[in-house]
Length: 251
Image 1: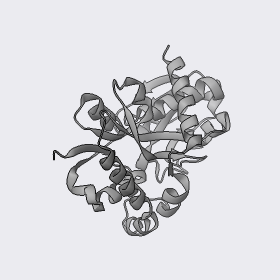
Image 2: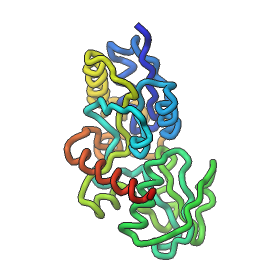
Image 3: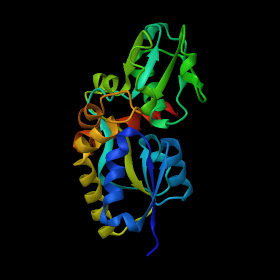
Image 4: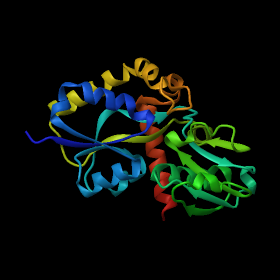
């Protein structure tokens, strides 16, 4: 049997998924590739992989798509790793530097700016090390592990998942498991079991990861409280609303 190629985000929030897949019965049946969100999406669109944990903003761009899992990367309130940082209040922001690693977070920031915050900044595509360019009326959207340790560096910080919930009353889904082809039912069942087993290892995994110096955050709280993994009805409703706003934003 040819291995099923899988691209998964290499951030801390996906570590339980990765652990589950590496220890599962299906580990010998898959080719697991670790990438940043934008690369996960591009690989799936280009057919380089069969399945990916992809940013939800890419869903409309896929010619063929199957959301196959009961799990996702979501948040109910604060996610703590998708942030807008600024040295001035929202109404004084003139420019926003955009994280090159995720389309979903960029789109979410633009929706919130237009629909909720009622601001119209200049959106600027950023490159590496752009975090150092936040000053004056220039803010930035920063995502993932690079947000850890930045809590007190800037005068203002806005958690985009929390702002979304204030705006809509719904949770937010950042990424979900999507295939670009129909996969065998048996594999999908094994895949979901692997993810579930990985999530059940969160507390132990957090203890191991906390031993190193890589993450300057409370990993247990992040994995067990900030990230909400179950792709339930409320998250599906939030996702549908996000995609409708995104469609109108692009018109």
